[in-house]
Amino acid sequence: MVLNSERIANRERSILAGLYLAKFDSIGVKHLGFRSFAEAYNVIGYGLGSKPASIKNYRDEFDPLFPNRRKGWHKRAIRDSRLKVFEEYKSLDLELFAGLINSFVGYDENVQSEILTVDEREEGASGFAKRLITGLAAEHYFESVQSSVPEFQDFRPENTTRLGCGYDFRLHSANDDRFLAVEVKGLIGLTGSLSLTPKEYEAATTMRNRFYLFVVKNFNKTPFHEIFPDPLSGSLEFRKSERKVIQVSWLASV
Image: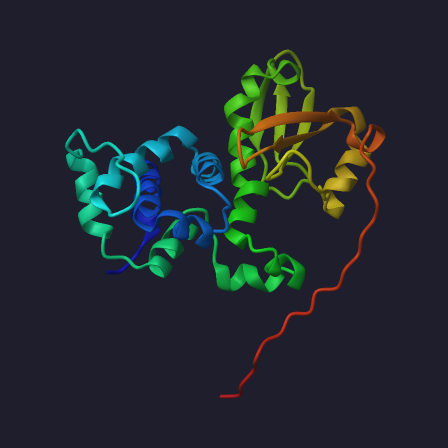
């Protein structure tokens, strides 16, 4: 089978995540770098722009097709659309299936492993899980709640993650030309370390009270957020950290 994630629709990606978790169970959870099913539902759900409950429901629907300890939705016939996905992808082994799930967020383990430190590789969580928690999952969580956050209710969001401007979202005022900058970070648990890139730090320094740090916490259980306006002048204490990254490659003449 030739796997091409670009041809897979967003909804089918969520269904495939559920199939993966049903087939490989706790081994599959660990292989992706998650510590529990709850963490996998939250991170994959938000990462794919879906809902955590949807990922769990898809897993439950596929559970009766596999010899795991859960019964799942065994009292009703599996839907034709799910059965079609099952028949197409049921033969994938763990490595291939995990690679397919990775590709949904543009993650290439061979490339990403080059920029992780030894300590980060030895923590046990894969780069896939880390990338989702600190990136897409947190960003999609922000998009899902932005309109209900009092500080941001009257602003129109613009995703600037690919523009390299030092923040993830530009919030435009509905009443004038004013805008706010929001940098989104994600944490697995209730506490953890945050880092700002030089460009993010520069943006926070320049914009001050128009710069917000939006931190999504507790992905391992029930995600919630905390907001830090003008984070360089508030309760957070940032210290400069420098490290050198050595990249090894093999060269040949042809």
